Amino acid sequence: MNKPVRAADTPFAVEVEQGKAYYWCACGKSATQPFCDGSHKDTLFKPVKFEATETKKVYFCGCKATASAPMCDGSHKKTV
Image (cartoon, rainbow, N blue to C red; front, side, top):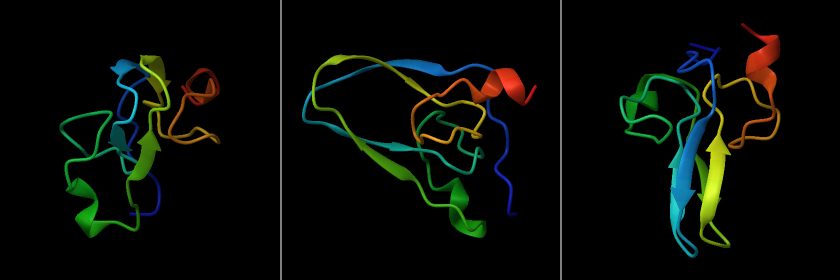
C-alpha cells in the first residue's frame, strides 16, 4: 500500500487540549479517525504527532491528501 485510504471527504473538527499529544492516522485505515489505532502496521505509513500548544478546535485532514499533515489544507476539495 503506497497511497493512503481516503477516510473522509471533509476534515475532522477536534477540540484539542493544550499540552496534549495527538497521533493523526496517515494511512487512512484507522477505525478511530482521525487518530491512529495501529492499522498502519502492514503499510509504509506512520502516524503524525501533533502537540497542541493551546486548547482550541483544529481541523485534522480526512482525505489524507494534505500537504500540511496533519492539518487540513483544503485538498479534499481538489481530490473528490
